[in-house]
Image (cartoon, rainbow, N blue to C red; front, top):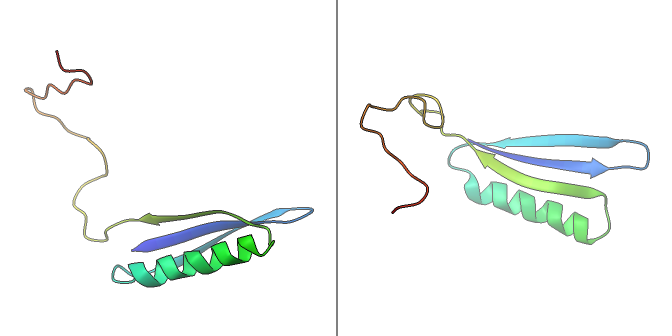
Length: 78
């Protein structure tokens, strides 16, 4: 699933918005973002346009939540 987020900046307040798209709708989500960017370029107060994704069938939590005893990741290799 994809979510497009954007904020409309107004004189007195900012309004946050979100629009969901299905897992097979990446192209429509990107087209929607481009429409928001066109509005931004035209001078509307549309800002902070971004897209996030999350697979609905993911197993486990995002990130490294469990490591084994031999896990030895280092930022710098020597």
